[in-house]
Image 1 (spheres, rainbow, N blue to C red):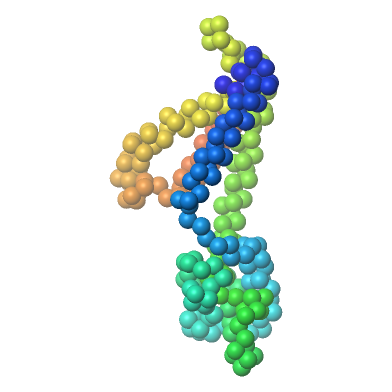
Image 2: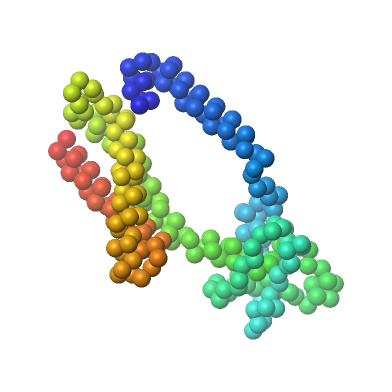
Amino acid sequence: LIVWVQENLGWALGFGIPAISMGIAIASFFSGTALYRLQKPGGSPLTRMCQVLVASFRKSKLALPEDSNLLYETSDENSVIEGSRKLEHTNELKCLDKAAVVSDKEIKFEDFSNPWRLCTVTQIEELKILIRMFPIWATGIVFSAIYAQMSTMFVEQGEVMDRTIGSFTIPAASLSMFDTISVIFWVPVYDKILVPLARKFTGKQRGFSELQRMGIGLFISILSMAAAALVEMKR
């Protein structure tokens, strides 16, 4: 709609409508400030990750205790991020666990305040979670490259297509609205039909796991690019 306004009624009005809408959105956002749950910042997540890497490197020669309960952890009132949920220790990436090993020197002087030498189990598990997400995140790069075609190459294809419906011509940049329309259509179909059907075969309440849903989405993106390639060959 905005693209049609810009092409037919002028760019001033085309930019003015989003500007007014954004102003209303910002006013709505701040009007609910009293209802938001506010949490004091606990520092940079990047700093917390770097602390784990540095501390584990410094203590690389120390041996891990057989009992993971001996690894360092703080109580909630002494936590950097008060009220945050404690994460249970996992046995993966044990090299990072050395950041939570309490050395004899730290026990002797009762000095546990340097986060660049001693980190909590929760802090280490946060980094482990991020590392385990890297393979999934990498697949997201490919999907983002495909999704970006909708606002670039697909617009170029739309420029040479017959976009007229009666006397109305759909702007090429507005063809992306079909993405939104397809989502609106498929969400209820997925919830009401596909999920109950998949639940009978997988036994899972949601039908598919998160990883399976991502895999199906990546496969569909392959089909969409194949269709786009055929359209481009025809063009």
